[in-house]
Amino acid sequence: MSAAQQQATEGDDGYNFAYLDEQTKRMIRRCLLKAVAVPGYQVPFGGREMPLPYGWGTGGMQVTASIIGRDDTLKVIDQGADDTTNAVNIRRFFARVAEVPTTESTAEASIVQTRHRVPEDPMREDQIIVYQVPQPEPLRPLEPREIECRKMHAYKEYGLMQVSLYEDIARFGEIATSYSYPVMVGDRYLMSPTPIPKFDNPKMDDFPALQLFGAGREKRIYAIPPYTKVKSLDFDDHPFAVQQWEEDCALCGAEDTFLDEVILDDQGGKMYVCSDSHYCARRRAEGHEGKLSESAARAYAAAVGAAEEEEA
Amino acid sequence: MDTSSPLLRVRNLTHAYGNLLACSDISFELHSGEVLGIVGESGSGKTTLLNCLSARLAPTNGIVEYDLRGRGLSDIYALSEPERRLLLRTDWGVVMQNPRDGLRMDVSAGGNVGERLMAVGARHYGAIRQEAEDWLTKVEMDLGRMDDKPKHFSGGMQQRLQIARNLVTKPRLVFMDEPTGGLDVSVQARLLDLLRGLVRELRLSAIIVTHDLAVARLLADRLMVMKDGKVVETGLTDQVLDDPHHPYTQLLVSSVLQV
Ligand SMILES: Nc1ncnc2c1ncn2[C@@H]1O[C@H](COP(=O)(O)OP(=O)(O)O)[C@@H](O)[C@H]1O
Ligand SMILES: [Mg+2]
Ligand SMILES: [Zn+2]
Image 1 (cartoon, rainbow over the protein chains, first blue to last red):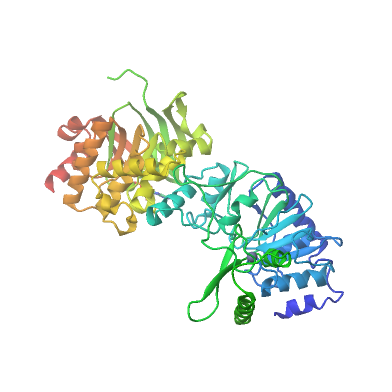
Image 2 (cartoon, rainbow over the protein chains, first blue to last red; image 1 turned 180 degrees about the horizontal axis):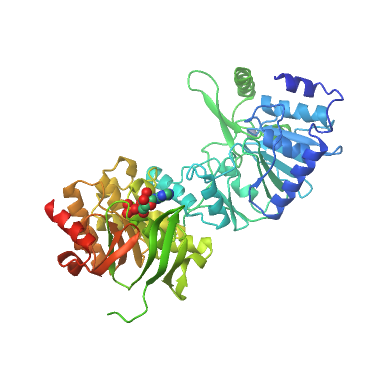
């Protein structure tokens, strides 16, 4: 934990509500309004330093800090889980600097800040989801020149993105891109839903909640207003398809969720479990069962706990 | 003389880099199906002129008009930027002297050829691939290299790939800057043969910049001879090369004969 973070999370009176000063929040809100008005368009903003290094969700945090109010309830997920170091830190941060209640339940949250996943539970019109974005420019790996990228967006010249999918098929026989899979927003702007798995792409289409994206390092904000068309790029003869698993969730038996592979031991033992930890836990509480016994659940808890410690 | 409306019309084109007049007061017309060679020694302004003609460098003065489909002769620098960019990747082709400037080195040969098709909306992988195969075959590329990246290709292969990448949208007008420059003599000969065949087969109109009079003789119907940014002589290729009038052209021709 950096010194700055230490100070911020100690909740002294030196900090404004939600950490950012009002002027910065107004500036970010203006960018958000612009982003909502032009769905999928990357709006540059004067990013502020946050008490976390880039790569830990500073862009998403600035967006959340600018929209959060005293009667909001915040949920933070990272890789689908509420209990990873990053998610816990961000949740604690806002609990201190904005004194808002936090939750692990998607349904109870008014704001969900996320890295890597869209929750499995449906979201509503009165909710907002804030994505932490590491690399907002989908054309960047193909076209290193910034000005050229901007022209491609301005003139809707997106043939090059299609070339990258062509390259996938030529090399692997199928579109192998499985994360940050490019989409067209409202038939106009190419957007990277980074870094969620393509499994979640269909959820973004016609989504009832407002979707906001913040990239801290690149200082870009973009948005998808509720009920906007979001279409994943593909070819007529290689249509877009989401990941599928041979197995169901070993813990709750869900057949239609995004699964993480969990290594259980060093003899190659593994299982697949919902990456959305809250969704999985709720199903189990409701009595759903996977094919693995209680002992496996304990082994899983131990394995995840060990991995978390290693990460931290 | 061809009395039909020209494909390209250039009037009083001048381009200056600061005080340096790289092209000065150039006027000419190019008709459909014609191949014009622009010759002259290094530094005479050929590349600058070609860039101005191909909508990639706004001239300091003068007008470049092109016979746009459905619109007739139009000032290309009065078009909006997206219109110009569309023209450059559909009805026009540009073969760059350095393949690095004209190819995507990290995209497979097939992807390089398919890019223009995808840029104009092709969305059927199988059809794009088939068309890329056809064009790679036309430029005599080994289809076994189709999924390889051009950064691993020889100079001659890179140039042939550049040609396929440009011709796939069946452009009416192709600009080429020293298309055989930097290649071995035997590779040059093969590329020239290929270019000559394609130009005839596709009835391409082309403007080819070269300092090599042998290339000009093989490909061009007409020549423009440049010296210090000015056109000093123009005419049918055989006339200009066999019976040069301007002293500079005479010098140019005789120096080639000495080689
Ligand atoms: N970008 C530039 N800036 C300044 N001078 C240039 C530039 N490009 C070319 N020149 C100069 O303009 C003249 C014509 O160059 P160029 O058009 O490249 O001739 P060529 O293609 O016949 O060799 C040369 O004197 C060259 O040094
Ligand atoms: Mg040159
Ligand atoms: Zn589950």
